Length: 154
Image (cartoon, rainbow, N blue to C red; front, side, top):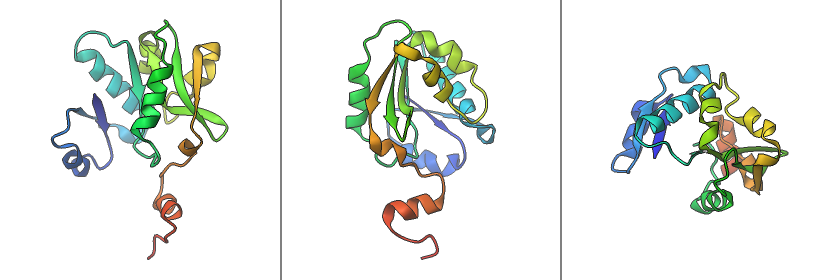
């Protein structure tokens, strides 16, 4: 398992201590999410045999659980070109699993849009996993306040 770190990497390394993960740094994290995807995919490719698929997860989805990940994995049939993504808030997104034939396209991503456009363009190759709670993400301190019912100024 590969964990891509960016902003706050020094603080977050300690949180990963002792876990069976490979930590890699996206030094250009401010360029956008696509850079982190590229860094992670390159690391997975560097580690050895090509994977059957890659699973992209985000750290800002507070309702993410092992159950959600298991549901995504269970929907993957291994067919060439297939992908699985969660559906929430009128869109699809992570957790998202891409069969190995998607790796080159993941490596060509640019900017701060991640793999969302790939998922939109996947057509019938995309299997959708309903997960309404995925619409909640924590991009700003105010988002956490809303989730916890507190005020950032408290």
